Amino acid sequence: MSTDTDTGTTADTTATAACPVAFPLRRPGCPFPPPEYATYRDAGPVRSELPSGPLWLVTRHEDVRAVLTDPRISADPSRPGFPRAARTGGAPSQAEIPGWFVSLDEPEHARFRRTLIPEFTVRKVRELRPAIAEIVDELVTTMLARGTRADLVEDFALPVPSLVISRMLGVPRADRDFFEAQTKVLVTLSSTDAERDAASAGLLRYLNRLIRIRRSRPGDDLISKLIAAGTIEPHELSGVAMLLLIAGHETTANNIGLGIVQLLTNPRWIGDDRVVEEMLRFYSVADLVAFRVATQDVEIGGRRIRAGEGIVPLLAAANHDRDVFADPDGFDPERSARSHVAFGFGVHQCLGQHLVRAEMEIAYRTLFERIPTLRLAVDVDELPLKYDGVLFGLHALPVTWD
Ligand code: HEM
Image (cartoon, rainbow, N blue to C red; front, side, top):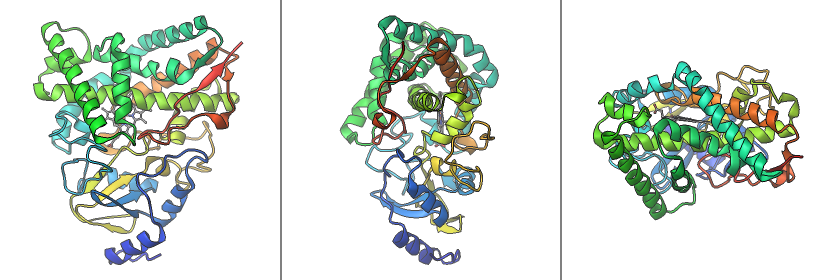
């Protein structure tokens, strides 16, 4: 493979020929992570093609961080060449969903981030811990009351973050089924454009109604606080709430579910809170979310990426880079995993990361303390992995106990 960095075109062509890449990639599953990731890392950025244009898959830890911090690389889907697998696939633009601030570049993005940061600090999350513990406890109590079998995705991993973010936003508990169903459509790779449009419109209609109610009857919830802050325009509020609602439950749910399997198959780590950071690194469930486009020619990992070419940093690949993590495909909570990029990197780094850590820690502790005989009800190889999801995870997690 050519390593000539001055002749972008030659190097690009060689990379394409040597590593033809289908996109969207098949989801990481068993074996995990997919063997292709190591091959890509050795090659450096690998070129692929989408209907929206050329696309670069970036896999090395150093290169992923470079992509996510380079001001010449944009998160704005309205720019030409932004990676889109289908018309509505990937991140929405401001024209589609005003207030969807993960799709904004600086300085516009900072207005949203500054308003929201105080609600997601370590201190704020510490204050939230009793509420999280109450939600987790209640879910375990319900499962125990029902018998000795459960689907831990449906009965635990999904409702924990879903109820927590609903409570923060002031979304009524009774509406959980509705917004979870819409979110599922939006994070399923095989959903059609029409299905996505309908799910998105339904969620926005629902949140606009809720915002109208909060305007006339404010509470101590986040939506009421955002209205009062006045820094987010009225037409942007539903987009902000939708981003928080979606980002706030599916991601964490997948990490909780996969983590439970890890602990059931590797019980010596039960009760050790260090597992949380390693699980975030190891599974990197939001591997395929940080889409970008170059706005000027840039060089990443020795490859020339031209203005208008799409870039997808594969976060799971970076988190399994052996140059940064020794024995990266091993699960080792004793390592220092803090430099992982499971939450992204740079200005868009996950706003909810402290919340996620608290939710995972409380969920694992409570579950294994209250159900010490918990075990899988099927063989680990039979667990249905999400190959069709934007996020990696499990469709179901059947368990039993004495
Ligand atoms: C295991 C759980 C989670 C993972 C792995 C995760 C991962 C990520 C990643 C990779 C990004 C960066 C996207 C990019 O650069 O384009 C991100 C951004 C974001 N996440 Fe999370 N996330 C998780 C949970 C949450 C939760 C619980 C919330 C709560 C509200 C949340 C809210 C957000 C928001 C608002 C952004 C956009 C931040 C910005 O653009 O400034 N996430 N997340």
